[in-house]
Image (cartoon, rainbow over all chains, first blue to last red; front, top):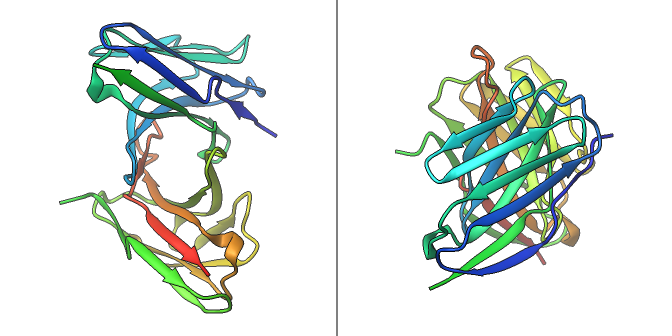
Length: 111
Length: 114
């Protein structure tokens, strides 16, 4: 059974600092790994999806890497801004298009 | 307009009541999902449907049932609500015609069972 872990559960950084968010998974036989952002009281917004054949994806200030052999994915957010404050969730997709989510990392970027 | 909508957005009910949460999508996706989110536990899959005639149990289906009325509509029912079903419920869709299998989420329904 796939298990996804995100450590730390919460993170606070000053504005401008780069953010590094970690995600680990137990089953390397994932089809893809997806990173989401969740704002309080709102749904999930998909940020990046890395397919199993890829090692990274980039979108603007966001870069996500995937290392299946070590069971890890990392989301980098460059030059953080207060608007980046949110909870970030990673999820691994297994057979049948089913996602297994981590518990999330709550990020606070201080002005 | 939002591609994935959920109604109601908030619901307070009492133990033993039957309630239904509804999800509609305009994305034309064939696959739909129901998740619940509890603090610190991430999201857990309740039920999923690959098309109108295909319904599957997820990780935590006990106490829940679903109905796929049409490609665009997927409802979640709690037959007899209990307090530990208090959670944030999300509907999601995905389209497997492409290579990405990306899931798109609705805004969520906050359910409180007293």
